[in-house]
Picture 1 (cartoon, rainbow, N blue to C red):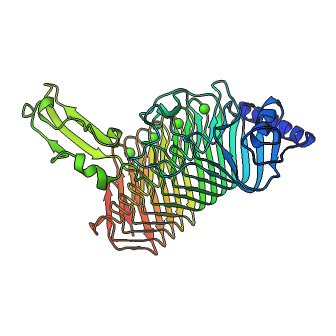
Picture 2: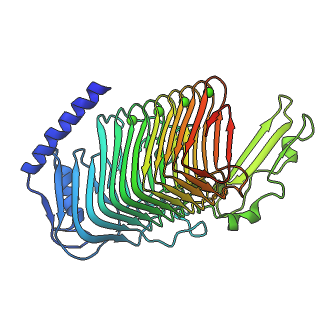
Picture 3: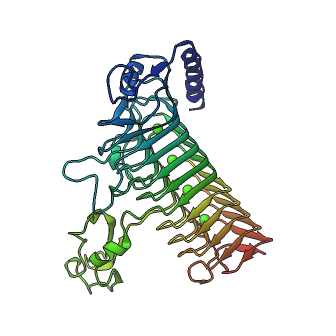
Length: 470
Ligand SMILES: [Ca+2]
Ligand SMILES: [Ca+2]
Ligand SMILES: [Ca+2]
Ligand SMILES: [Ca+2]
């Protein structure tokens, strides 16, 4: 893999040099189509086999009726000057349909807005539109790159930004438990001063930024000075299935009020009187418990789980409304989950603030440095690891308060250790002050240690299989 990536990188930089030799394509008007339009520039760029720049020299909004599509495989850079690209139609706004790298600066992308579970974008034959979408080729190799600087994405029904290396398109699901196959390529996403606001409200499971990575290859993410707010599903979701890891660094980025598409206040009326129950063997048959919810504004919002005994009788069932997180990573199969957050805010999200799940070989490495999680409906920060691999965590100058779940959770199953250091950190009033500022769990083989210094864990520590060094 290393050699393959190095060769691909060399090829990319050789290509980048060629780009400077070729004159940029200049957009001279704000028309939807025709000579001098952005659409015409993308069509011309698609003909080139070398990387190409498109410069939007015209002032004013570009209002489009249909998606802007780049079909080249080479890198494309679109340079704006603060223009808005708007549409009243429920369509993808900008698409790189053959996996070409995309770099965009100084542009705003605005969908129709006004979407909600009562005004969906995925009904009556419509396909919910995305803001910026790269579709990776099945045979792609190297690193697929998306770079956005001074960009905003608002008002689309589906994902605000989506990079898909998964052949099931929008049906890939999460990393663990998800499906689909992918290319050998890795994915790199860099965001600098990017705002993703009010997207993903027209469809179930539509995120602010979504990366689906399958087959070999990693996800590399860097965000700086960015914000994900009022997204219908997760502010940021990375799904890394099969071989490969997640490497992420999130700096000065905010995740605020995400995850409310499946609005609990509205959907509560469709819930059964008893949403969960356990039974002795033989007490209840599957026909005698509440059935899956139907007839609601979006039945996909209800998670329905039934476990049965060998006899066929019901052991337990649970029905829950599927709200979403500020940040949600799923890393499955071989590879690690690496997250470093610095000077960042996670607040008011409808499920967890930070929800990390790692399965298969490989561990979780978490650094929360000067981060604040408050007012999230479930845990402030959660890391769950299973199968082989360790959980290594560090909180420095972190705050977790007033969350509906626990302040911070580090839990590990099967082989592997838990090692967490907490320094200069403050937790208070999480889960109604039920002694759950910090929860550490080390199960099965392995050891656990927690070191806490210069910290105020007002709502207490729960440790299972973990030695606490005050
Ligand atoms: Ca891949
Ligand atoms: Ca993996
Ligand atoms: Ca693991
Ligand atoms: Ca263990």
